Image (cartoon, rainbow, N blue to C red; front, top):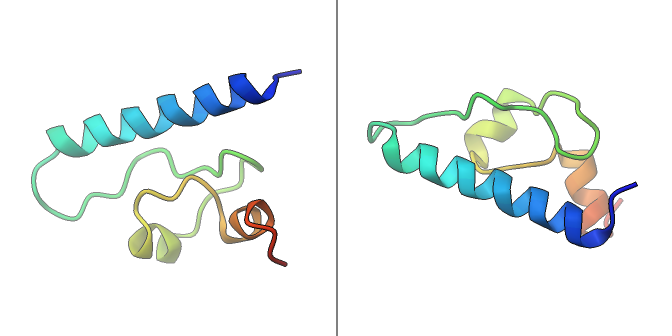
Length: 69
């Protein structure tokens, strides 16, 4: 089982990978290839990816993380 430091490092690595890819991509609207929620593994809906292209979680998991339901 991963501890909090491992989970945090995974998120940092994921965000860094996406940031580097965004810098190398042409300056147009680019939706990252990896569209799976980091928590539940479900596909993040296209509408959410368009509104929040850097989203790592689906709406449900993000709401749960923020303590909202």
